[in-house]
Image 1 (cartoon, rainbow, N blue to C red):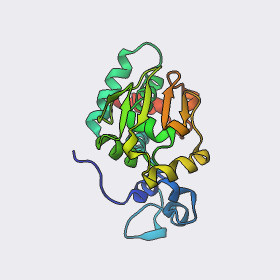
Image 2 (tube, one colour):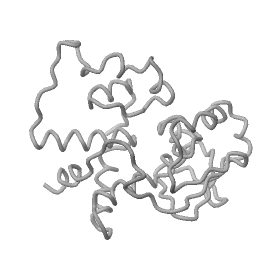
Image 3 (cartoon, one colour):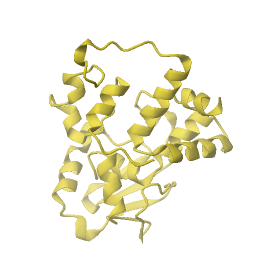
Image 4 (tube, rainbow, N blue to C red):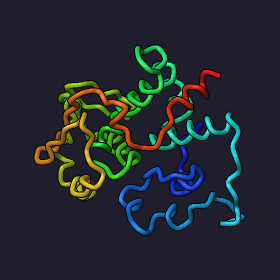
Length: 210
């Protein structure tokens, strides 16, 4: 299935929660979810959110996480299978794998205002990991990895602006940013406490294991 390229604010309205897919716009009064928190569709604000079945609740949770991280169904199932083979709680393992994606780390460090923008930067070869070129957004970082913006991109106005506004989001404790040298270090693996989005990961595990 192709990647979704339609209006991103529509996804937030469908899930009934702000997913922060549009970067800084999500923090302003221009946010479409703040203006129109009802579901998208031709019937407008008269629509009523129907009560979901147990299956529907789990499906929506899975869809929400896919949309937050911008991944396909095939990738999501792959991460589920990896998570169930790892020691520990499968739900926590799943979120840890998603957080370790290079595009997510670039976003978390503040080099991009959204994961979609971070994915584009990685695809276009803006970053090195441990001194080596990496252009795969799904690359999984590990403790000790150094993510560095290539020198020729350090005057990019969008990246500079993003680094100035990263304080609004905050940088998780498992990452460390050296803004002066355009570098980030993975200090440790992310824990469940580092993921502040409203996610019920157990529902996703239940959806795939049914």
